[in-house]
Image 1 (tube, rainbow, N blue to C red):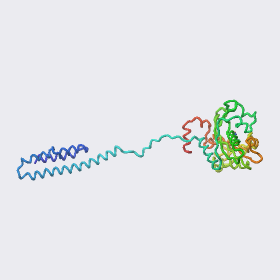
Image 2: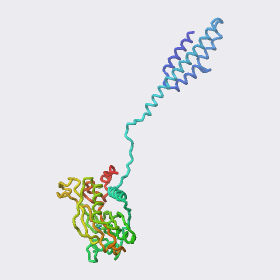
Image 3: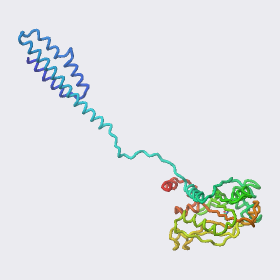
Image 4: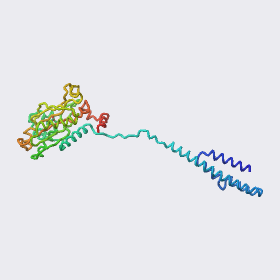
Length: 344
Ligand code: PHE
């Protein structure tokens, strides 16, 4: 009987101390298995006096029963502990910021170009592009630019051979559109694209930049139509309170020609460094399409008229985003490029 009690105490202690479910399982196999000490107690039964046998047998079974219950309880306790430990060790800190991968964004010139295109598409214009390489005829001749005009000189334009050159203005596309459309009317197009000039690069000059040409030809297309269109453009790009003004100018391909100013969006026309104290900022050149240009393309200037304008995309972007050096657009410093993510 004392051996019996000893075994009971020992099993209790061991079960209590079991650290994990494997240890516990070993204990179960040991104490409740066929070759274990509890089972071998039964072997002693035959040496007991007859009257003690039933009680002994009952006690052994009770012990087995008790140990089995204890082991089950302990198993649940360990399983719970192990689950807690697992949860703890595999815990994910959902407050940690994720690893973001760097994505690109649209270039500011693309942004401005798209904004202008959208604006004109909204007014019913078509967007037409043309080749960067053009020739003397479309770049100059058809644009009514006389043979001795300085724009034709080798030192101002980038010629590829005697006749071909990189277009110096998007007016070359305008001439192509006019010729291809004749004699149909109306024409309502914008033509964006890169243009190239022999220039020394500095804060405000670049040998390559972007323009958008606008061209409308139809019956009675007047200077006031041009003014209304450009006022719409100025308000869309620089704010609803902007105004525009025309100043007389000269372009061989327009008559009359105007230089267009927009009231300064920084100081609201009061005068500041951006507008050099004048309250006005020059944004583009424009005018009524010259009768010679219409004639050369195959239109009769007595029965139709049109307006054209050429706007510098860099200039608009610099004014809109407060960029002080045109070279930023082309040097691809990512600190500059990424600033425009928020405008997309
Ligand atoms: N082609 C002119 C330039 O490059 C701009 C312009 C276009 C002016 C159309 C009038 C009409 O400066």
